[in-house]
Length: 432
Image (tube, rainbow, N blue to C red; front, side):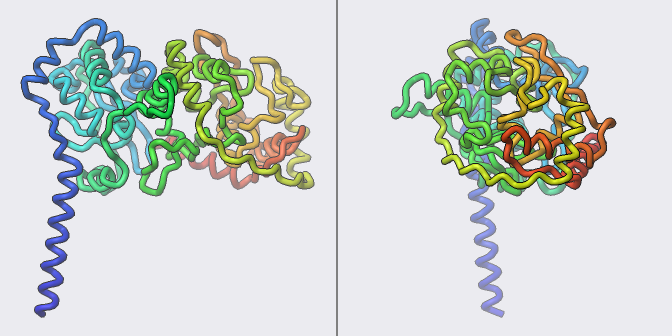
């Protein structure tokens, strides 16, 4: 009995120490949100700050997430699907009850830098404080000044619909202890000013690894990793920026990368799916200097050694049957030999997006169609029609198997089961 009592006492002590450590790591940030410094910052908001904040909010794609369809800009309420349920974006307008009208600049800084709301609650990481923590205090204050200038909207933020226990404060505290470390971006002396400016934008403002980082089962990641991964609950794959076979940019020019970021279209690639939305809402607003800085950083990412191309396998009967379907439904736009048509329709021969190991993006494009981003530099993008109701699962698999194995493309074929699985996942997600 004494041994059991000692074991229970030790367990209780360890529990107390763990709780104290979690409290220290998550709640003891030392930010005074109500002191004299907060009041002083409120009086110092200037038009220049608001302009800088508006620019950062555009480049960071803030309003796209914090505006529900048909809602007031910045009023929140947008449902954000995650692998753990649905989160809802918050109201960032100047409304004093439902927005940030009564927040100080210090409280806003604490939210961006430490992931805590004005009332001290830990925020769910659907809000990318894992990235905004890198923003300077000056840029945080600029964003606060801009959002505080938005007309007030009394739109309340719906309660998150996350599966238990993921939305609880205890679970968030553990998650943060595993995956979050606050820290403002510090320039790296081994690189020049333009590379560091690009790193600040990629890692912090534009939070690129929110999509391009491979995540584990708990949704955690190394937030500097851009090796690609499936986007939870969205049915898309964000390709690796470290792999020349996926979306590596080491052999692109700075001008070509900047053009892709600002227009969504470049000689050797174009933005589609979620990336088209990022370009439309965010990166098309980059200044020329900032677009070039991001390009310099992305171009310098270490690249994986290119793997030897796989040996060409005999085409199956499924792929052969897809040749006729391609001729009927695809060749008019993409060419009989997959050569494409200028900027209007991309080539499919030798296209990295076509030969990705993950076929999710191809299936999304064929089933649901879509447009490239409409930008100032490319205002009238051509679209891809949806074939959801036109082609069966087997016909989609046959068409894509043909495309992935024709004209020198050497990729695995697509199975009917893969088409059915994605169609089912996206249909279920749409019904939530």
